[in-house]
Image (tube, rainbow, N blue to C red; front, top):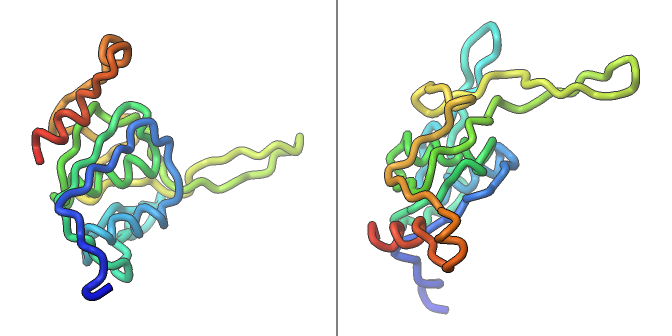
Length: 164
């Protein structure tokens, strides 16, 4: 095709219920929406924090971004959401995230053969803010209620369409 596929004018990314994933994939996904940005920091107990940055090898999509989040959005999902908010890359809609992003874990083998996973660094948002135990706040509060579920309504999608 001449000129490639048309680029979308906007992307609505539904991350509700996303329990997390790879920090590397967070920086890759963010690289589709911005280049040259700090996405988060990994801070050791002693020493300087190390910035994580967008993966600038990913081609920019360039659209407006709306992200749907909720209490089920945890870990890498919160990492992504905090970077979107902290870098002004888009609008967050739904409810505050889980507050469960402590940083990559390291395994410690115990005497009984089990493994204890503990974070080896502390994860902070792009403005060095604490997200763990607090969560990422939304720009527009749009909770899903039992009535919404029963009647097939989705306040998050409705709000996303309204802000586009």
